[in-house]
Amino acid sequence: MNKQEILYNNKLIAHFMDGKYWPKSWNPFKKYHNRYEFPGFRIGIPPEQLMFHNHWNWLMWVINKIENDYPKVQITIEEHKCIFRWEGKFTITKIARTRFTAIYQSILDFIKYLDDEKREEELKKATEYAENLKNPTIF
Image 1 (cartoon, rainbow, N blue to C red):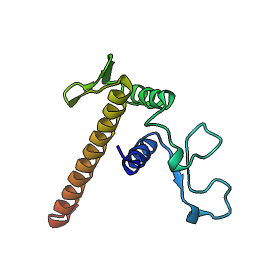
Image 2 (cartoon, helix red, strand yellow):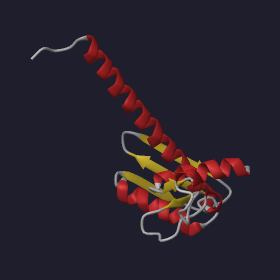
Image 3 (tube, one colour):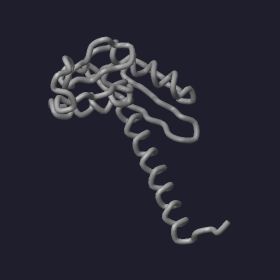
Image 4 (cartoon, rainbow, N blue to C red):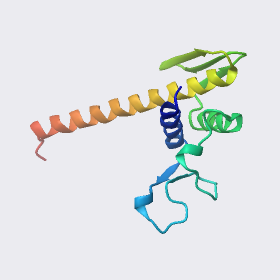
């Protein structure tokens, strides 16, 4: 992966982890502008210093959030393999040279799956709303 892909993936994970991004233009006088702030952290982190792609503790932080927020997702981690299984929805299996890489890639696929599912749900709601406009009900 090149630096741009790493930065994009780290930002994707940061948003999943409820990180709030504060751009410089939002408040030029704020000490921690152009940073991600996470619940429970006292200091903001610049996007370039997010460490989800190369730090074990950061990766396990994401795994803990997935296990807590999505209890139906079964996560199996083996030597060079990671499996995310959500009964009736999906199975993500990643095999890589290292355990870390397999977990990292599985997490990215999981977050992208959730984003796609959310978009489909929003499209369905928009379609229903448009249909209701075409056929209004009178009370």
